[in-house]
Image (cartoon, rainbow, N blue to C red; front, side, top):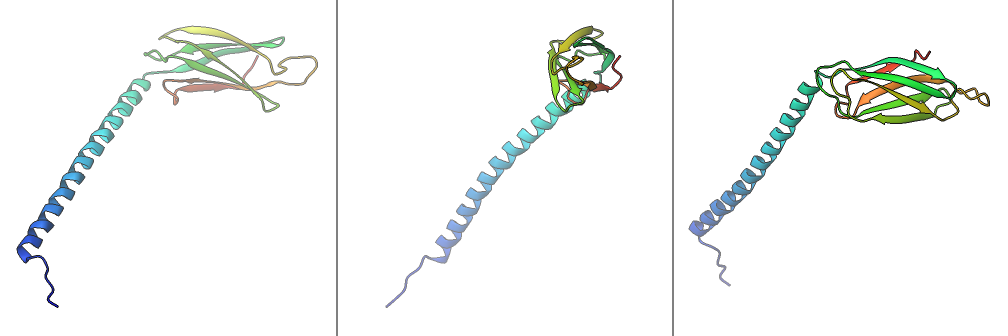
Length: 147
């Protein structure tokens, strides 16, 4: 029985065509991947630069009866958007709230209650208060000095 195969010329042409097809597919993927990565890095860099001009500060935290009133200020030079205010209680629970749109130089007060704060029935005290920008999570402030 005589075996037949493809001629060396056809084999070489098929090998080159296959290699070129794989190279085209890889080139398209690498180009898309590189562009997506560059866009992601660029957007994150812009956000970090803008957030470097942001600042938050807790001016005052006062416990009055069953309410705690917290004065929050934007001490930066750019708006910080929405701010999350979290009150940590010494029994391990938390109370959170949100300040919407804290512009440059603004000082806003927020009053929070619940969780048995200051209640005569319980011995729950405030451990600390933390504020964080939702647009710039690395911009925050925390205090355990509750008057």
